[in-house]
Length: 212
Image 1 (cartoon, rainbow, N blue to C red):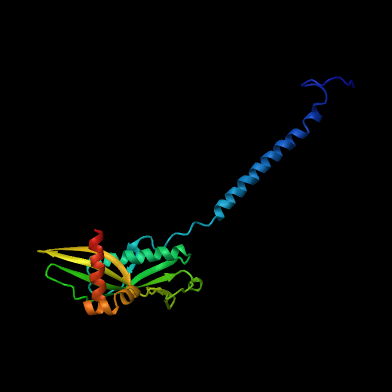
Image 2: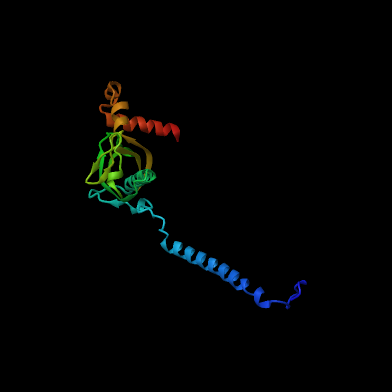
C-alpha cells in the first residue's frame, strides 16, 4: 500500500468510519441525560409558599358585639399590618381573628361629634409556635399570639361626626396602653381631664387637628 495522501472516498474507508458514530452517539447521550435531569428537577421543585393571610379580608371577625363598620375596617387593617410584620420575622401566620372590640368611655361626645377610643383584641396563629420568640410583653394563648406587646394593648382612636342623617368617621391614630397610662396618666393630665382615657382622646385629637 502506498503512503501517499488520502483523498476523500479513497483508501481505508472502513477505518475512517469507526470513530464518527461513537462521537455523535456520545453527544446525543449527554444531551438526553441533561434533558432528563432538567425534567426531573422541574417535577420535584417545591412550589413557593403562599401567604395564608393575603389581605385584611382574610382575617376572621369573631366579635359578637355590634361595632361600627368604620371601626371594624380600622381594626382589620391594623391586625393585617401585624400579620405582615410577624411574617417578615418568619413566623408564617396561617390564621388570624379579631376576638373583641371594647369601646372605652372618653366623655367627649356632643350632638355633632364624638372622639371614640376602642380597645382591640386579636389572635394570630403561627405555623410553628415553637419558633416564636416572645419578646417584651408578647403573650401566647394555646399556640396563638395575642395583641399584647412591649407597649401593652392597641387602642384605635377615631372621630365620629354627625350632620343630619349622615355619619362620617375619621381615623385619628392607633395608640397603646403605655402611651395612655404614662403620657396621659400624669397628675397634671388627670387634674385637667379626670382620667387617662379622656386625656389621651383629647390630646391626641388636638395633635390630629394640628397636622391636618
